[in-house]
Image 1 (cartoon, rainbow, N blue to C red):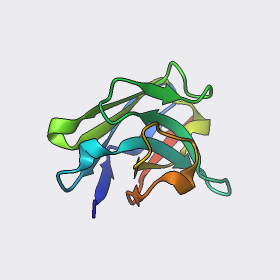
Image 2 (cartoon, rainbow, N blue to C red):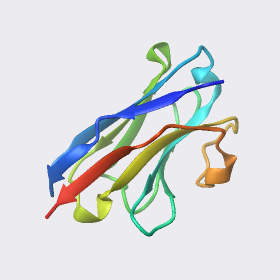
Image 3 (cartoon, rainbow, N blue to C red):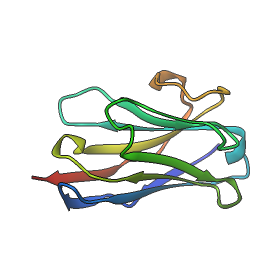
Amino acid sequence: QVQLVESGGGLVQAGGSLSLACAASGRTFKSYSMGWFRQAPGKEREFVAGITRSGTTTYSTDSVKGRFTISRDNAKNTAYLQINNLKPEDTAVYYCALSTMVWPTYEATRYDYWGQGTQVTVSS
């Protein structure tokens, strides 16, 4: 069993930055690919970025490419999402999740463990 805890969310002005973290319990963190998702009020949860087990390959959606950077430190059992140039449409609850799949996927149903989420609110 793995538990995930996100942190780093908050209220920022448009154009600002945030650094989200996802801390995992257990010693198997490096065995999972992981993804960051977000869910805005009234909308479905959407994939924004993913990273392979080793951290050598990353993915991000077109809507966040160039602004969001995903990374991980397997020695610290922690993953990160650096968010720059925040926009009001980035307002959402951000979740990290782990998957046994080799390549991170945009399909939320492929993830086995989820954190409780951290709120990001961007004011215009």
